[in-house]
Amino acid sequence: AAPAAPPRPCVRARARARAQRTDLEHTMTVCMQMVGNALTAYLFGSVIAYIKKLDERADLTERRMSSLRLFGRVNNVPAPVRQTLYDYSQAIMDTGLNERHVLEQTLDLMPPGVRADVVLKMRRHLVEAVPMFANTSSGFVREVVQKLKPLICLSGSAVYRSLERADEM
Image (cartoon, rainbow, N blue to C red; front, side, top):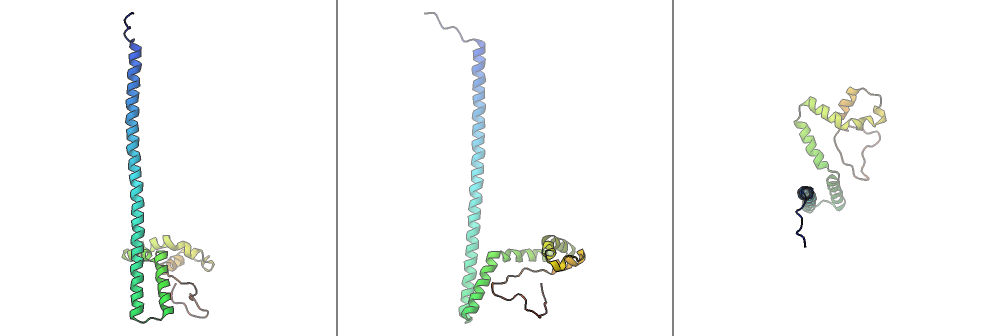
C-alpha cells in the first residue's frame, strides 16, 4: 500500500477555520448562558422582593387590626362602631392611603411654589373633570388643586348633606 499523502494546505486551513469558528461559537454560547443566568437571578430576586413586600404589608395590616381590636375591647366601643372602624382601616390599607400620607408629608417639606407646581401636575385632572369648574381660570384651578386632600368614604356614609355648608374638599 502506498503511504498516505500529507494533507493539502487548503484542507488544513479549512480545519483551522472550523476550529476557530467552533471556539468562537463556544465562547458566545458560554457568554449567552451567563447572561441568561444573570437575568434569571434578577427575575427571581425581583419576585422574592415583591413577595417579601407583600408579606410585610400583610404583617403591618395584621398588627394594625390587632391594635384596633384591642382598642375596641379596652374602650368598650359598640360593635357597629367597631366594625366601621375596621372597615375604614381596611380601606386605608387597600387604597394605599398610607403611601399618599407619606407623599403629603413630603410635599409639606417643599417650598410653596414648588409644592404648588407638583400638586397642580398631579391633581389638575381632578378639578378639570368637574363640569362646574370647566370655564374657570388656571389661577382658580391652581388654588382649588392645592386645597384637595385624599379622603376615604365608606359605602353608606354621607359625603355631603343637602343645605349643609361645606368646609373642606
